[in-house]
Image (cartoon, rainbow, N blue to C red; front, side, top):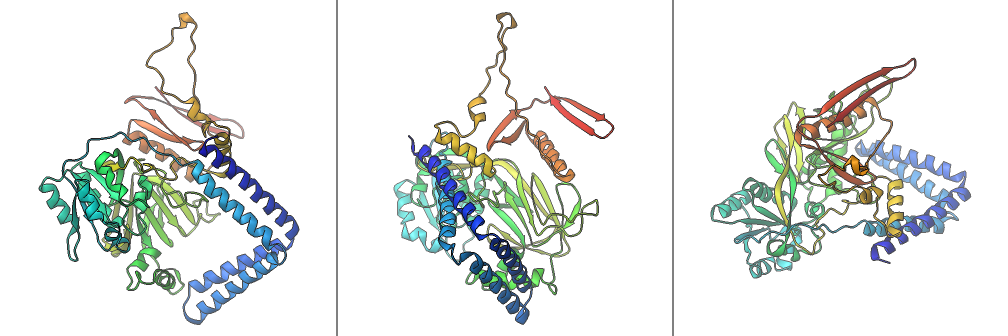
Length: 518
């Protein structure tokens, strides 16, 4: 049995144990559990009320929230604390082990090493990782010229001077803001780029498939590394590799003291931005339905879509080569939907190749963690496959969430297949490149048919967004990408296709069929 099979089997077993314990606790705690949930709801409402205010009102709200939380814990933890803790531990362990079952290592095509690679490094980044790991010495040992950033240096100017002097490979050891500067110049000159994880969080390195714990080993990207192309994104001409945050977080990072006390600064910004006496946010944008909206607590525009709100892989991007921006609006638009009956959802997420935000004033923004103010309108766009990235051969070369299925049911099915020694998704065993021949009917040959049909109930706006994404793919590329069972497929589309629209009306049903064929 392979390590992957063992991990999948263990994840399924731990999840089953956690579910059994949770069910037992729910049965024994009834109806106390319902009362505890009510206490939690009241605690959340009181705490939120307090966060939106200052002074005595904040203290009172947070205190009431703490009392509600304590009451909920007391109701369910009196005699069931041990099984509750065991259930939580079992689910947490299942997620951790399951992540290992879905881990993949990309086989990237090797490329000749650059002849004059240059490494730029920030000695202070990541608490002094460059000095701690001896990056300058290790770079020289690999034939890479190290250039240290000094206070007051213009990084972009240094990179451009190095390219003008003959550098044919650019690497950066520092935070993601610095990575974006070097990556932008590398993409402009179509030079290979390497990301060395010497920053604090190294989000870009993680999603590229660089081992964040192997700072020195990342230098091998310019010795014997493989190459992949990834997207870059930009706002008003400024390149970013991760995301641009507008709203609450962007307001907080502009404030003095943010670096020293991040949480305190963010909490202090909440009443000013979202409170009843706050100035609010004057940001205007169009949603996937094409209608105009106003922002809520935050807008996050990312270089490809983030995986959000999941137990495993949340906060990572499964891909950075999808050619689309990820757009997330939290505490979203105010007002009601077009029908006037139901309020719009407070959380929206979609993808698009471009996005625009309008405002009547300079907009505070956090660009890859760097605080800036941007003049409106803010025009975002993605630059598909603009950057040639080199990755060390012993690093994964793919995001930790690249192979993770979407949804609990799909994850359980995939784990069961892995445990049985099969590929995680049936489609991956069925779909194969078709030969460029047509079987002869005289020989009685039959062509195999691969068909994927997906049916789901969506709101009208969600259906429009899905069709718009499809149209964007057709307009931008000669292929269509879609997902099924956690797997991604690409279908090539010729320059000319047949479009068929069919409207069928019965007494109580309406059906509109859209068919593309070639």
